[in-house]
Length: 399
Length: 69
View (cartoon, helix red, strand yellow):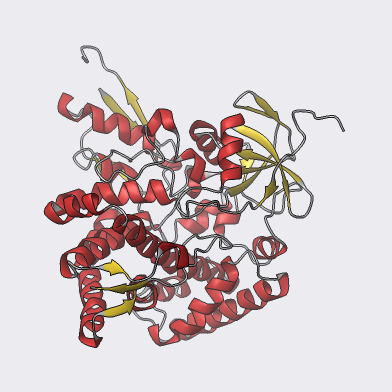
């Protein structure tokens, strides 16, 4: 067999290695071969793995790369992801101007000063969760008792989704993000959530509240299907990402007691620490898919029109030149050039909210539970290598 | 230093406000970036350049006016 530079040596998605906080070793090996390397998807399709920081920025910000999955050659990690991207896609699977029209309907709720005004409410939700944990005893599952309910409550309030329905939307969200889920399971979860949100929006049209779904439902220029797709995106992205970041950050921090001590001594470090945790953990580990619409020279490689690319945020965030000792967690590092929220016009819309939630959750957790510790050996923790959003399934703690 | 905005490219990520809050704001009207001052003092230059580099939509251009150190 002859090997050409475009022969894939890697099948995606790849498995994690011995360090649960590092990107899968196969991505790291690819990154050491070059910033753009050939890979093969599970369905046998070819795609380029883009691992360098600058090249990832280019793929995500250059309009020659499309986020619209209807273009031939668009890369899909699994049949489930294909179904999600093709059946009633949200604006993350559209290009401008379609994308901007829909995104701009919801940007106003995530402005920095709007999110700052939500901080006292987020603090009350965080304190309430810790109050319940300490009232119940001295042990808890930090995922189900803290990391998951806090952002779920916040996004429910913002969207106008009743929190009592959390078991339904949390279970369906997990299925949507699970790379092991069959296409029919993913489609059923999407149908379930879409139906739920369509009914809720219809109810809000008749009886509006002070929430995002009510404001969307009151507009004349957006269809029920578009409202459901936007609502689904915000609901899923709004709780799964922050929940997994909160739990995983706690695991990563507690292995570094000297850094925890510094954070407890100087809460002013928390803002920077959250940026560093976003960089180090980069929980969206499976890569952001795009397809080239034209021939593009990228990091010395010619990407042909119609070829798929996956922008790997996790390896970009381990760029040694940019960050130095990039494989280490260092809470006082200036990590602001990280790409954990993506880049380009699709960069995370909820990032001011995610930052506020993480800053408040982690600062409060460390302050109010000075004896916080994990009660099982790290090798017993079940990491979510199979999910689009990396995290831990449960996190037994005591204080 | 002169700061120029292209609001058409703004995607309201808020990176500029977090990086250089003295110079950038976000409009309640349309959620888009606003300039609080177009000619910031030299002490803010590093933050403004970082805000331009971090802007995901490429909406911020920094021009070096004559006499800029």
